[in-house]
Length: 432
Image 1 (tube, rainbow, N blue to C red):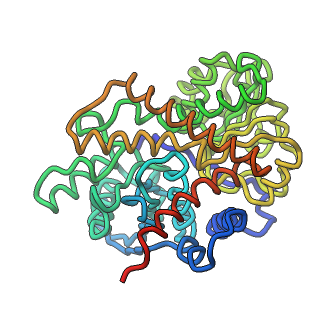
Image 2: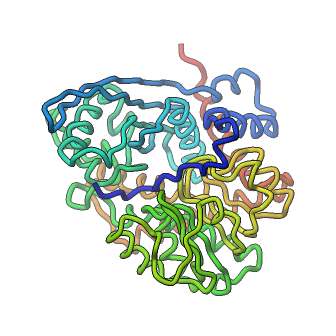
């Protein structure tokens, strides 16, 4: 199964000595900080601090051997005040309900910070899809889609790809949902193949949006991209494309990693060649002319720009003080803990938070949804033009808030997003 979303990076052995970090605790801490700055009313804080809806499903799948396995999946909707829930579905053996809740909350803020009319949702299945056949993955996907079909729909909750899911996964979900309702419903998911109503530019959108924000940040910091050395943690869809786009801008890619390890060459290398090597060897490690290092070492390399494009909690209080990059762009969701944020900010690091940096994916998902509803499809140039305008405006608004309130970029982005969701929630009032 081809992986076209961010690849997971597991913590190194040295990190396992520390207590596990709960993503939901992190998400709530980040919200609490913004709520304090905004002086939100206590009742409103209680509403926004918890998900609106959590669905847990246990479902059987017939395996190729003829045996039956039961899998556990989740779909969480955090807040629907500004529109339907929007968020990806991930397949990973370490998925937990708390992780999905955190990701759903982050999606609420992500949609709000770039100003698109969605709320936050997220889904996941506890499974290692690499251990399943394509037929088994399809069966799992269709049954999971059936189980969550009671809460998804074009006007209710629109899933998308995430870790270990891709356009084919979305095609199966769209087809399954369409069979249930009795007509073709392309707008029920985004990230679909082009022939089924997918959008031009969707596959590259997360990375493209991240690079747009990195360009704006570099301009603000007086950094020249052709002189920048870049390290990318995670060489799945977002990381690999971000590396390619940064190389095209003239930056030198000096390190990349995947779930098997990392490679490093201070003189730089061609990320396109590394991608070909990975496709042939199922790992970036061993690429000729580079040194194999650990993912932990990659984060602490002497570089100008660091792009975490893996899973959550990669930059923590244990390693934040050793981060050398001046500019950090979070292409992943939740890669930095609140404690690490404080350390990075104190050390003069400029961090573009996930809810802004990687919002290109959900922005073009919104474009896809609009195109599906209108049955009117756009060119890649039109998609990227609109994406650039939205990302640039969101970055400028966040930077203005950061400078005005003298807070880091994450807190600034949260303040913008939480205020927008709070305003919508307050105006709608409580029902009944």
